[in-house]
Length: 182
Image (cartoon, rainbow, N blue to C red; front, side):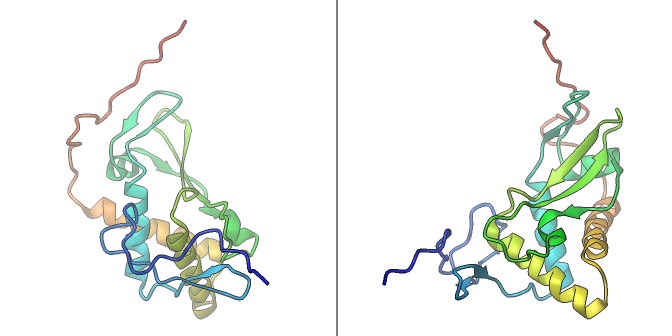
């Protein structure tokens, strides 16, 4: 009897081009074909993975006012953190889904519009690694997943806030995109 191939073939130690400079997946499949990843070993590693991913989402433009946030640092400095982080997969208790819904970290633009950073596009091995780490740490620390997710979000923000402010190399800092009306 032929078995179905898993939806994403395992990588054999090769680096993912968009997964950070030293990320090497260590994937195996379970009896149901879902990929399993060992939890990240340290909190610092998880924070760095999240930071690298979020930095890759920039530049980001506010759809309301057209402000361009050239970097994650500019975004953190200019926006106001909102609400707790939300991860739909963890809310559903699905820490190893082959098709993650992802999570959201929301903030207000200076114009008042709500902006969101989403993990929907995070590569599956990284998403699974982070969710496995959160699940293990929830049990170890006696915390809820939302508390731990917010803690990680705040740790990324703290790192950014203590760094010297960098001017955007591209000259996009504070740039407004003008909408042409027909």
